[in-house]
Image (cartoon, rainbow, N blue to C red; front, top):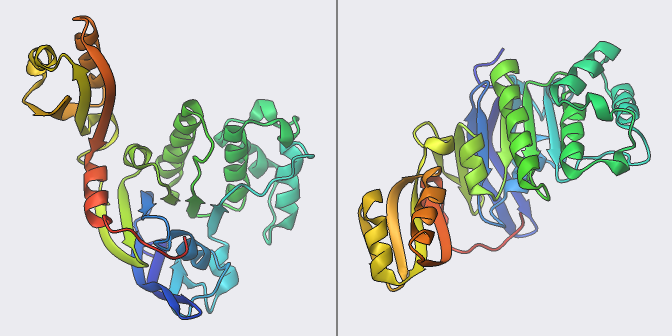
Length: 307
C-alpha cells in the first residue's frame, strides 16, 4: 500500500474566469482523522468533489492508495468512500433494504456477512427493519456511513457530517468515526464549520483560504477535554466576580467582561457555579480554544467565491 492513502497534488479548478482552487496539495497519513477547514467560499466542497471525481480539475491529480483518479479512476474510487452533503438514502425502504440496494450497485461483490459487519460497526442492528424515513438525523448519518463502508474503503470523506445533529448525535458520530480510524485503520477527511468538534474529533486539521492550503495544525497537544481554553464571562457586580475568579488564575477585565486563560473545558461549570453561589449575575459565557485562535488568525479576511 502507498505510504499516504490520499494524496492531493497540485489541483487547480476554474469556473469561467474565477480561479477557485490554486495548486492545492496535501497528503493524509493512514489511520488519522483530518479536519478540512476554511471560510465559506474557500473551496472545501469543490476540492472534495474533485477528490471523489464528481468534477474534473483543470490540472493536478488525486492519488488514492497510489492510484490516479485521472488515469486509473475505477481502481482509485474502489478505495474511497464519501458522503457529500446529505446521505443519499431511500426513505421508503428499510435500513436493510438500503444496504442491500447499494451492495448490488457496487462494482465489487459484497456479502451478507459484510452488510452485517457494517451494521454492527455503526450500531444500527435494532433499526434495520425500520423505514429510513422514520430514522433520526443521527441514524441516517450512521446508515450513510455504513453504505460508504460496504466496499471496505481505506479513505472516508465526510462533508459537514454533523449538520442538523443534536449534541448526542454529534457525540455518537464522533465515537464511530474515531473507532473507524483506530480499530480499522480508515483515514478520514472531515469538512466542518464546528471548530470545537473538529478539535475533539481530529488528529490534524488542514486549513485552506481562497483555494490554497495555508497551514496544517496538529491537535496532539490540545485534543478533547485536555485542551486549554480562553473563557470570557460577562458578570455583575464585576469586582465581586473578580474576587471569586481569582483562584482559577489571572483574570483580565474589559468592562463587564472577565477573561480567564488556560482553563480546562471541564472547569467551565465549576467557574460558573462559583459565581452563582455568591449571587453574582452571569449574563454570558463564551470560550475559544487553540484551534479557533489559529483558524481565525489564518482566515481573518472575508472571502467570496464558491464553497
